[in-house]
Length: 133
Image (cartoon, rainbow, N blue to C red; front, side, top):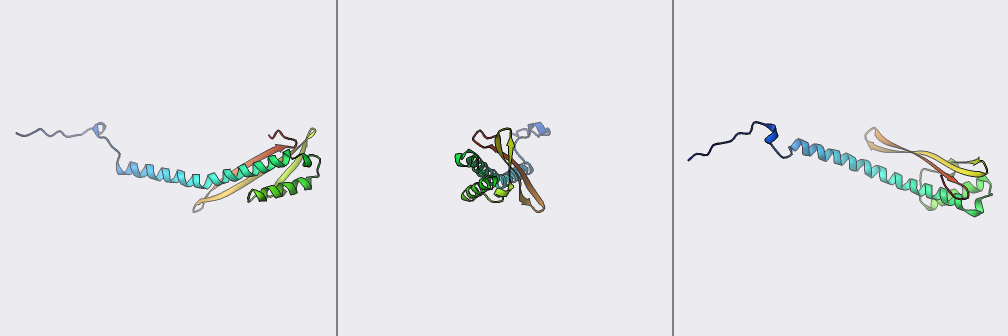
């Protein structure tokens, strides 16, 4: 007894992932992981820089100090936290009304593939006497 052979002609009845769709997913995930490997250390370093800036701004001994003393204290804290690529000379000390504000704006560039790269811009501020911004 012969069983009838059912032929599938409609694409809606076909299920499963093709080799090309799996390859697309793997390449997309690979690129996302590669970008994450380049980006996460940059953001962790920025947290160290921002922490050093806030610690210097909250230090009661530095509230009435000269800008050079504030820069030296920030330089010591940055080197203790292994923050590279940023120096205390990059910080701008301004007066906003009666409070002094520490402002640090910098860019970080990381290579990605070939001539492509990632650029991160950070703009950190801390108000002397606490209450960072």
